[in-house]
Length: 242
Image 1 (cartoon, helix red, strand yellow):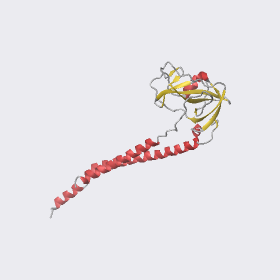
Image 2 (cartoon, rainbow, N blue to C red):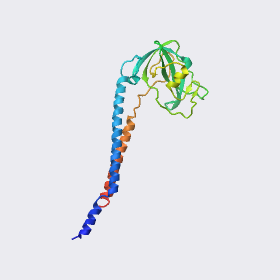
Image 3 (cartoon, one colour):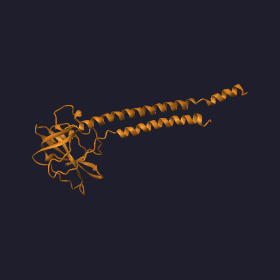
Image 4 (cartoon, rainbow, N blue to C red):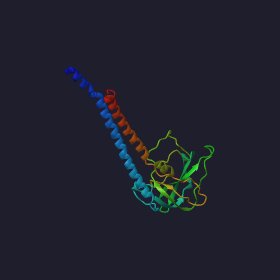
């Protein structure tokens, strides 16, 4: 028979080491929590995407007067007014189909006196920075359709001087209000159809990206990390001993 001391030593050797076990348990709990958080965020973004698709499918209505513009994001609207060609701006570094160009943004004075920025579409850049595209808006009263969007709340700029004449690096509503010396409706309307003959700006606007695939990828990664951590602990604790 095996001596009692030897038996006790063998039993101790078969017990999982305390520190690696605690570290593994903490890591697995952390990875699973991160995966669950990403899963919940993915479901939230999927709900937002479904709501946005439902809103976008509604019939266009006249641009409302409201204080809750977040509820109108991606809603199709109709506008009637006159473009302010003197204050048209070009938002730089907009890439489409591998080509660099500009988003053409023009203030539109509505029939009720309000002014709203209209993203009229995209135009490719010229051969050099000295040759800006000539895309004047139609004159006189125009009627157009578009979708409501919110200007970016934050953006990154490499330098303080990011405005060179009509070329801006980013669309900043406060900056536009100061430059145009007029109050603006706090949204941007992305034009979705030509406003008349000769209006050939690109407007194949993709649906909004809510980052659903990103959350799904991170969720899978965290769950894989949890599985690997638990699998490695099992292997080093029991597999190698056998």
